Length: 113
Length: 114
Image (cartoon, rainbow over all chains, first blue to last red; front, side, top):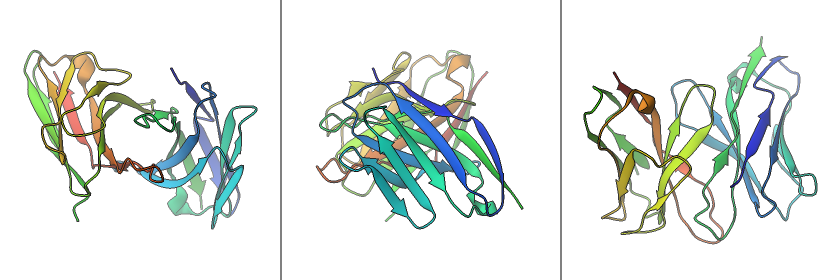
């Protein structure tokens, strides 16, 4: 089955700096890659996603890049703010199936004021 | 629109007891999923359903059963709870259409088995 690895497990940045979280996946058939943000005690919420026919997608301060050849994708957050502090999860799934998501183990991002 | 709701929010069980977690969605989604989340780990898929009356095993199905008798509800059962099932359980749903991939999560159920 699919295996998703996520790095780093913890990340601290100064407010205003950029943060990058990286994930690799094992199944070359995967073609949907969402990123979820989870605040303490809350449910995961989708912040951005990308499909395999696109190499990069941007939404304001958040961007995701995908390298299908290398089987890795990354989340980029620019101009970080204290409210960006949370756990971020990457995931991968295969279109045409029930779209089961395989999640990475998460990155605790702390933005220091 | 309530979205995805879960009942109960918290529960404490003794080893060997049984219980059922209820997930309900009012978005007319076809696909529904049950995940568990343990500290330091991502969410792991327990069971899922692609429509009313259908269920399938996910990554960690042992010790759990599910049923989807109505499209809007997805039930997760623990027949004989074990301490290893202490976790936070999340339900999610998805439209299932070709252009709609996003999974919407419920607020979670925190289960402790003593």
